Image 1: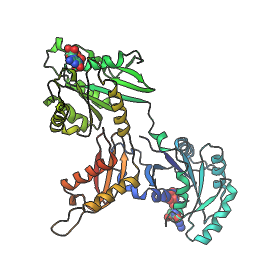
Image 2: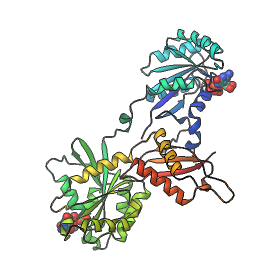
Image 3: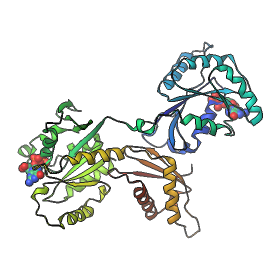
Image 4: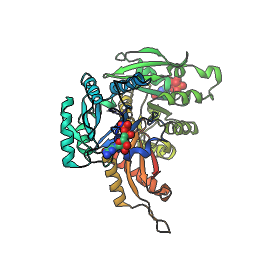
Length: 438
Ligand code: GDP
Ligand code: GDP
């Protein structure tokens, strides 16, 4: 979920905030009203080529001043640097090297983070190179002449900067997949749970959940850890206490909220009921990944058409989660039970997948070429400027357009379908935000 961080460091007035705004300019419109993207306003999303990252302005760093706030500012800069993959030190090319620059450079050289040196306010190219050369003396390597106001020179700096960002695989790595097993009573949830944790290969350990009777279990297969959520709730013999019609839907909702991937268990004999649809709706609304598990497949009389007929029944009745993979299993005989985890892995991977801005814009361009946005009777046509992924778990894509009102549901669905067709995202819901300029 977390993006690499680029820390901007320098003394006051060298142009740090102008520089940050320059890097973040295209993304600026996205951040403010998106819950969960960036809560702290000093972190601004930016991208260059295929890479997305956050830029943080550390505030004016000073060392030889005894203002009241100095320790606080320095602490902030330290904290920003600690989580940064790379730092950019900004200096003022027109002012030349100052004592404060030297103090900051000395401090930066002692840190383990790679540092790039941006010599700002170099509006003219030839003069800029001369101005910049002076800053070799800081011992931070090549000085890059830039103009934060005009944007010149920032491209070269960014080319260099992204080489210091960690590889994408490393960022997306998480070690545990949280799995909720939900479904109506008697569909076979506890039988499935036993099939998972009862295996000799599984390492089982109860770990504490949120409440005393919500026990999670940890299972490991092929080096992957899974946390099975609220296993106490699954095992509880509720029929005795409440009668068979008791659904325990709140408990299921709670488990869904805590999960990465939800196993929606359906009884093959009964087919999809209204309660199953309710659960599917909640899974989609909560933005959870999902695998649809049709259990008791052993109890169905089958011929060569059965599975296709069943699949059609599912398409008809489970449209909230029509992006989810389906698997037909028997917890009783163990048929295909182990394969469920393969589907869980795939869904979890898609759920936290991040697609680069350039790929998203290729899809948009392609989609727009096949089928251009609608035009109103007044002759106004919808125009998509660009799109970018703003978050993961689930993936959310913001589309920047001239006016969201110009895009009817039909066209929106078309674009969303094109994304699925080109990029897959099987097993996870994907959210789209249609945004007007400003
Ligand atoms: P910060 O205190 O380091 O964040 O600096 P600011 O971004 O607030 O900029 C300080 C001053 O430098 C402002 O008056 C800016 O307009 C000016 N400034 C910033 N970038 C440039 C630039 O590229 N060229 C010139 N000439 N002035 C700049
Ligand atoms: P839960 O209430 O969802 O936890 O369901 P249980 O795991 O307690 O199973 C309810 C009933 O369905 C039990 O009688 C199980 O033996 C039976 N059952 C579970 N899985 C299967 C299966 O794959 N095939 C068949 N034929 N019966 C099953």
